[in-house]
Length: 184
Image (cartoon, rainbow, N blue to C red):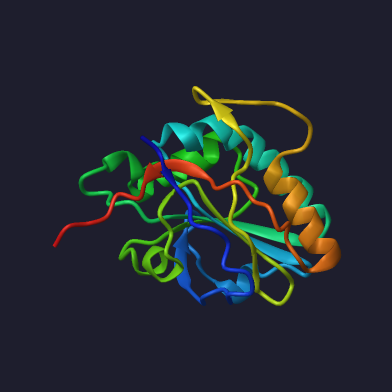
């Protein structure tokens, strides 16, 4: 049973972070902030929901960059119990899928907890003032196959945010695998 994201908490400010990227740079929220908006995504390497949308996600992020929205992906999964989500495999996954956005490692899981991320994929779409305006899905999936019907929900919402500063009032939650939390 997939986990679903909560309703968008409109206006909630993005939380600063500094995390290591798959190209071994430390990146902060300030480094990736976009002129017209910022998309922060919690994903991982092994989740079938993420794998089902990865190609379109890369395409959407390319389109978003053309309108001044920068994107970043963060992997927060427990890589000890889920070695597919190790830093080395993050590098491999981002290269194989031609990521055009930074892929960051949240080794301590502090950033996922601060954002209250619940699943992979979990999308946080911010306006140019880093105020949350979207917490929905990329698009509908049926048996891990994207249902193609024009532009994705994510791309449409982020375009609206770039143009108006506001996200759509009606948003369909993202569904995916629960974040693999470490157990003390």
